[in-house]
Amino acid sequence: MSLAYFWIVLLGCLSLSHAAPTIAPTVSPEDEGLAEGYLSRFYADVGVTNSSVRRIVNSSFSQDLQTMQAFFGLQVTGVLNNETVEVMKAPRCGVSDISRYGHFAGKPKWEKRLITYRITQYTQDLAQSQVDATIAQAFQLYSDIIPLDFKQVNSGTADIMILFEGGHHGDFYPFDGANGVLAHANSPGRGQGGDTHFDDDERWTLTQRGVNLLLVAAHEFGHALGLDHSRDRRALMYPNYHYVNTNGYRLPDDDKHGVQALYGSRTSVPTTAPKPQPPPGPDPGPEPEEPTEDPNPDPLPNPRHEQCSRDLVFDAATSIRGDMFFFKNGYYWRKSATAGGIRFTKVNTKWSQINSVDAAFEVPSKDVVYLFEGRQYWGIRAYAKTVISGFPKSLTNIGLPSSVSKVDAAVYVPTTRKILIFVNNQYWSYDEGRNQMDFGYPRFITQDFPGIGSKVDAAFENYGYLYFSNGPRQSEYDLQCKSVIRVLLNYGWLNCY
Ligand code: 0DY
Ligand code: CA
Ligand code: ZN
Image 1 (cartoon, rainbow, N blue to C red):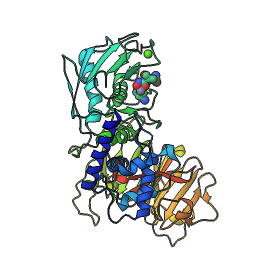
Image 2 (image 1 turned 90 degrees about the vertical axis):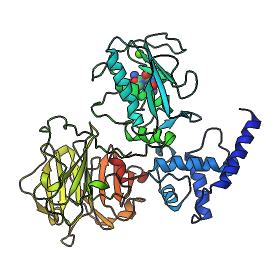
Image 3 (image 1 turned 30 degrees about the vertical axis):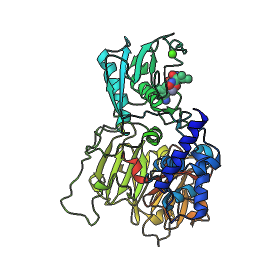
Image 4 (image 1 turned 180 degrees about the vertical axis):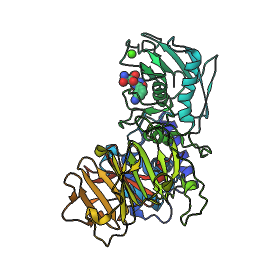
């Protein structure tokens, strides 16, 4: 780009900034400065790093702000308001933790909504119709959540040209025989931009054996849409292939955030819930979990319609054998780890003695889950989801004072074997190994968990991080660095796009 062109772009941006103010009048000058520093540290565009340039280029400020707002699940306005400033002020563990996904230098992306693709050379490992269907399915993982559509064409030059071939195949990156490099793709752009090649010396399958085409194609199309590799081991864009169950597969959260930061999200909320999948392993088959219309109306409203509300507040949350259970008003949403689908169930149709769950946690090493309601708690066998005999027990049984009439939240920390029990602005620590309450508790939440707020509505553990909900807001907390590393909204767990 010539220098002259660069200044024209700058001037263009300047006039734009007058048209649309990017700072809400309620934001103080100090917070404005904080936001500028924050965005240039975490969201600086490649090539525009000079802060004096950034100050003038308001549309870049606004764009970076939009990326940040999308990442944190805030309303994407591009205008700095106090809610956004609050999220920026939440302490974090250092630069690397803010986003695990990556974009390519210069953030190339498609500037149109309809992207065509063409498969010019097929593999012999699968039927052509299977390849067509799998490639379409891989694209659909993206078109479900971003406002792009993909269309297969059978002649001419498409935006994304796809082929299967081993060794040399017409670019400067010959494949390496079986294993190693499985496929590669170019970042978005004209000409070869987005083109995707699969190494035909791999054994392409639709199963766990060989190399699963859906997973690799979905990874490659991530590149073709502008995603670089991610540091999140759970992400599809993690550099190394590993098989995961592809039934009902959806994009992992990290990749979803990454691609939505480039293209925004599809605005319409899907009207049909994802198909429930049977739970895996020794779990005794599909369970009689039905969306329940209650004949005797409850004092607490059925929260089903709140699933995709930004204001959704949980009563409790826990993992059970990899699935996530989110409780609210005597109901729960169950998110399947393998299928990703969500089921909505009334608590007392599952556990007849329990009407509403205040707090819940799982001790995976014992395969037991504990559910709390009022002054009582129940032990549940995780594999069968049945109440263990001898329950319910009283809260005083675990050493809580009799003045506690209900607990707000509880979570088990596998690394320390402690159960943290939250009541109002304090918490207790119960040692699961010694089977007794730790000395010196209760302690104040704000003292030991900076940044999560002074009260916890629901808490759970997931992949080594702790999640604390306070109202609709949720903090992803790193116990080791003792700080919040991301701020999320509760509804983000419930497949809402
Ligand atoms: N392509 O996108 C790749 O990342 C290449 C490597 C690159 C330097 C050209 C690749 O094929 N990497 C292998 C891979 O499977 C690495 C491996 O584990 N053999 N990447 C794609 C992939 C597919 C599905 C990764 C994940 C899931 N996480
Ligand atoms: Ca290879
Ligand atoms: Zn890759």
